[in-house]
Length: 105
Image (cartoon, rainbow, N blue to C red; front, side, top):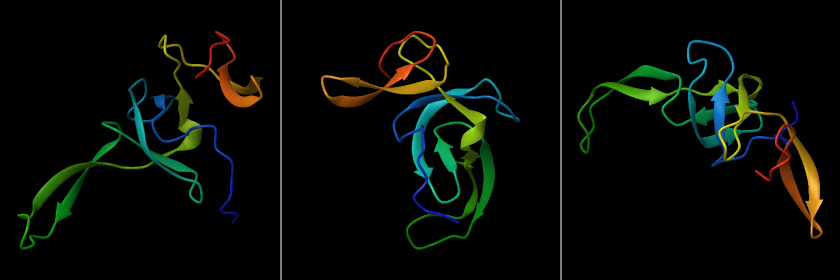
């Protein structure tokens, strides 16, 4: 499997979940894994994790975010409109634009 895939979703982007148990929820992307084609979104797709106690932290059951496949996510622009993106050039620089609103993301 190639590890240098291109992704349209980057760390720090606001996204909406399109399908699954977390459908309709929005959040900020914390981490993107290009090799697995997944992303961890803050506060979305929460799962229970059993943690062993250590010297620094007590053990127990912890809620944490599980990764989502990138095909289940769509970018949201500043107005809160979810749309596909396209690459355009502004002053010689590459920028991502929303296809619906034509605004720079």
